[in-house]
Every structure is written in structure tokens, then in C-alpha cells.
Amino acid sequence: MSLETLSVDTKFYRSLLTMVRILRDGLDGDVEKVLGRVADQLADDLQLPLVWIGILEPGSTWVNVTAKAGSAWEYAQDLRISSLEHIPEGRGPGGKLLRLGEGVVVGDFLQSPEFAPWRELVYSFTLKQNITSVKSTEDGSKVIMGAFLSGDNEFPPAIPPLLSDLTQDLAIYVQQKTIARDFLRLQAYQRAVLNVQQQLLHQNNPQAMYDNLVRSVIADTEAIGAYIIGRTSEFSTLSILAMDDLENNALSNQGGALRYSSQGICPTIVANEVIDSGLQYGPVDPGLSVLNGFVNDNRGLFVRVRSVMAIPVFLDGMESPFVALVIEADELRYFTKPLQETLRQLAASLGVGLSRYFEHIKLEAAKSEIEKLALHDALTNLPNRRFLEERLEQAVYRSHIYDKLLAICMLDLDGFKSINDTHGHDAGDLVLCTLAQRFQLGLRKNDFVARLGGDEFVILIEELSDVAAFEKLVRKIGEIICSPISIDHTSQVSVGVSLGAVIYPFVEYKNSVTELLRHADYALYESKSIKEKRASFWMLYG
Image (cartoon, rainbow, N blue to C red; front, top):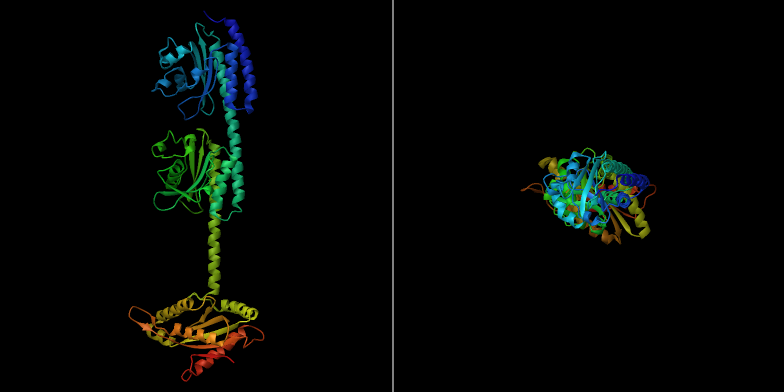
């Protein structure tokens, strides 16, 4: 007994018109729901016990059955169809057509040997004849459709080509949806890149750059994981410097950088490949690639990862990556070529931001070094005359405000010339540097020591309560200077000191605080002039 040919043809044509409207109106809808409506419509209009629709994505070997309808829909609940020829699930008509790329075939479960793996299950649903149709999309996906009859019914000859045409319409729809999805996805990433670029202009440290980037990717796109990973040593240790994912595992919630061996979770493994090679790695399916043998990933998110890629981030002038950007997705065909290019732009933007930051640090360090050289003695690293004059004005002001005495002490070394003449200028330099270190360690933190040149120094002593406090500190200065100094493993030298001082406000100035330096210099001259008969190595002005 067979179906009435004219009746089935007419029903199919009418159903086809309805399904075309479903596909046209479903361009803004969810693919699985639209394909489900198509399957329902065809099963209802032709009173078929089972209609199912699946998609084989590029690079995959298993069909994802996205829609099933009819009274025997449970048959397709666990339906597994593969494009691999060497396994039973790939030897049926569907598997053969997938390997061919497209086509339509009519089969009989009871007679065709290729249906052997499903025959027992088919009996329970009283299914017999079926049509399987496959069509390819422009991007390499394959849409596969199955329609089934039960009992003694048979498909009229006109139905297989019509079902093939319907499958072609479904392939066109899937392709249009893929194009639209990829376009919207690309726009989302482009917005994320723009947001990151704008933020990079205002962020003043790498961690802020990393955190903002991974947050933007997760917030603005469909990525399920975003990571910035760098190597922390010459060995295999990698550090996840920033991360965010759909499980809300932001690194800011983890309390710092996370360190894993390169033979660890999926992101660190692909990052290790990138940092070692300097090249983009992926996109790959971690479950089907060579990575699968190295992954020890217990994250709950990992079971959803279908595609992952890692991109190197370079600093200006560097040949090796500074860090790697890793993105995880839950779709196999997620990273289209335009999207990969956009992610490379994102990595390049991060590289520019990092380069600007480190260049700024270098410039600031150079500026600081220049300022230091301008204010410090090159040999001893003590402040020079310019720095002394600035500090003297501040010290005089503090003395006036806090009603404390300020002593300005000028000194030079007795016997220093003979050290240069006997032991050489290197020994003399060593004496000066040793005394500079002693001053810094032996005096109070707020005492200021400057070298004017040669063996001449100035010491500003602030916050003195009386002259007795001054005399106590001057004696300490003498002890610091007169203690023996080792110039090599076997030789020591000693120097003496002559010091002249002026105490402000006991002695004031008329026009400039540098007058106080001249007064101290005059006291030093007087001290040296009576060196042979003086009772003390120091003398006060006035």
C-alpha cells in the first residue's frame, strides 16, 4: 500500500510555502527554534512520524541534531551521526552523504544493511522508509535532514527532490544566520577593542590595562573566558596576570596572580605555545587537538570550551612576546578570520599601551637621573652647591618658623693632599666616598651634607636648642672624619679637619642666605690660619 501521490505532493508544496515563510521570518530568531518550527510543520503537514534536522560544523565529525518532530521524535533524542567512515555511526546514509558533501537518498531500515546499528531501535518506533538529504553551506557547514515513514507507506518519487530543495533552503538560512551572527559578533569585539583603546589612554599601570581588557571582552562579547598570561621566570612557570570568565572568576576576586605549570589548564598551555614560538596559536578545539593529552583542567567552565586561541602581545622593539592574550569560546567555528584579525588588533593595542607605559617609566627615570646629576656630586653622590643653596633657604625658613637654631658648617680635610700625592688620586677618591657614607650613616636624618668640590664640605645642622647641642654634634663630625680609613687590604690613612661655622639667627644676613655661607667660609679660614695653636678644630663666626 502506498500514499496517494497527488495528495502528498500537494501537501508538500503547501508545506514548503509555509516553511519558506518560517525561514524568511526567522532571520532574526534563534536557529534551533526556527529549525524546530520547520520540522514541526513538515511532520504535521505530511503526517510523518519523524522529522529531524542537524548541522555538522566545519572541523567537527559529529552532527548536532538541533530539531526533531513527530510522534517518534524520541528516536532522534540520542541519534548520533558521524562523518567518519570507520565507525558504525558514519556508515549509514547520513554519514555517506556528509562525506560526499551533499545529496539525497531513500533508504529502507528493514532491507538496507547500513541501517543495522539503528534497526533494533527503529523496530520499537515502527519506522521503515526514510529520506536523508544533505546540503553544504558556503562556509563548509553541512545541513542534514531526515524524514521517516512507518508501516507500509512509501514516499512518492517527487518527494526526495523536494526534500532536497528544502534542505538547500535550510542551508541558505543557516548560512545567512551564520553571516549575521558573525557580523554582530565582530561588531561586539570591535566595540570592545575601541573601549580598551580608549581606556589605555588613561591607565597608568599594566595591571589596570590587563584587568580592563579581560573585563571588556567578557562584558561586551560572547567569549566565555579571557586571560592575560605571562612567564614569571626562565622556567616553565606561567602567571595568569588577569582573567575573567562566565563563572565570574575575575582575578581581582582571587587575591593576585595565579601561577600554573605550562602543563596545566587550557589557557596556560596555549599561552606557553605562544610565548615560546612568538606566533598565534589556534583556534583549536582543546578536546580534539593534540592539547588534549596535556590538559589537566578541572575548571567547571572547561567542559564548555569548544575553541580557544592565543595571541602574542609584543612591546616595541621586542622580538619575544611580553604576554599572551587567550580567548575561550563555546562554539567550534567561533574565531572567523575577520574576528582573528580584530583580536590581533586588540593584542596590538595592549602592546602599544604597555610600550607607552614602560617608555614613560624610562623617561621618568631618565628625568630623575638628570635632575639628580644636576643636584648631586658625581663622585660621592652627595648634594652639590646648587642643591645646598636651595636647602639652605628652606632651613633658614624653618629656623625662623620653629624658633630653633641653625648651624652652617664649612669644613675641609687636613692632610688630604698628601694622600693624593702618596697613594694616588684613586685613594683620595676612596677617602672622599668613605667620608660621604660615614656622614650619611653617622649624622641625624635631618642633617644635610653637601660637597662643594675637592675636599670641601658643608653641613647644615637644624633644630638645635642651644650652642651646647651644636658643640656635641661638631665633636661627632670630628670623630667621623678622623677615624682611620682603609684604602686597600693592608693600608690605612687618616685625615684631620678644619671647620668654620655660623649659627643663625645669632648671625643674620642682609640680602641673601648665601651670605651665611661666606661667614662660615671666613670662620673656616680663621680656623685654618691658627691650626698650629688652636684649642679646637672648629671656630664660630662672630
